[in-house]
Image (cartoon, rainbow, N blue to C red; front, top):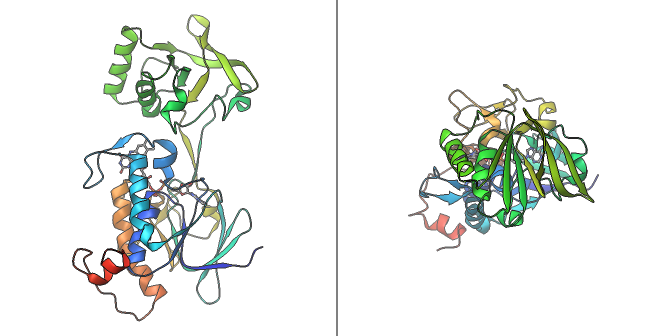
Length: 341
Ligand SMILES: Cc1cc2nc3c(=O)[nH]c(=O)nc-3n(C[C@H](O)[C@H](O)[C@H](O)COP(=O)(O)OP(=O)(O)OC[C@H]3O[C@@H](n4cnc5c(N)ncnc54)[C@H](O)[C@@H]3O)c2cc1C
């Protein structure tokens, strides 16, 4: 084990809610260190839908998910948060003095006065479809998310699934791909009816192909796909396929969080709605990971939770210090912290 790295606040996760928490905590002079399994900030926004527009962020009629992450990173830059990526937080224990020791799967050790769990759906992983030998193509020809649409330009795409992700990417990638074949086991979809109608209209114009059935086999060499076999009502069909995008949903694995002695409610962490504190004082949970009556898994809900959590965290980090409510528009002291005064 390495010697402990000390910080005021240790944040588990670096999704949008964790990033905004850095801002709210920073206004109260608290230093944050964030740890995430992913290799970059942004959580679901960066990993699952970076190029999709979000329409319900206050003040932004439309902003791409990655655009929002970039703006949040810009907004928290004055507070110099530290990040540790590609690490899973595996252990969380309370020390005799009330502070917390956090350990990662690489045995790094952190000590913090307060821990904020902003772990979203936990360590989320895409479900792998039951296609023999698919592992050999993963990362080269088989992808479970779209980071950059350009990477799919000129390819023969096979997209599998019947939910919003499958339909959205079928429509978004159709203009850049050489061919698109959507495969779903039945002609009815779970996706938004508007997307389904658009897909059928494109099929009508022969701009994509929709096959009812399941992908049962892949052909290619050295991780590079050539074709896929679709087993449908009329038998097997071989379709051109240089990129396969299966959208079978995500497994929401709480992972090690389940072992930290916190009360849980259906894989989420119950919190109060005044401080967003868990059953252990000093450990807070904000964003998609928490639960309380009326909880909405929206980014804006997480932002609100971060603001209230920061007040409560300050009382633990600096006991006895008076907390003054201030506006960023009128407080010179806050503006100095932001580097604008
Ligand atoms: C396709 C799609 C569209 C969406 N559209 C909208 C929308 O229009 N508007 C809206 O408000 N919301 C939308 N959402 C939901 C929104 O993305 C989530 O509410 C938001 O991402 C939650 O943020 P978060 O920071 O709580 O968690 P996440 O974004 O899930 O981030 C949590 C992070 O914690 C990390 N983590 C988990 N466990 C550990 C661990 N043990 N150690 C280290 N790291 C860990 C994960 O790797 C992840 O990066 C959408 C979601 C999807 C999938």
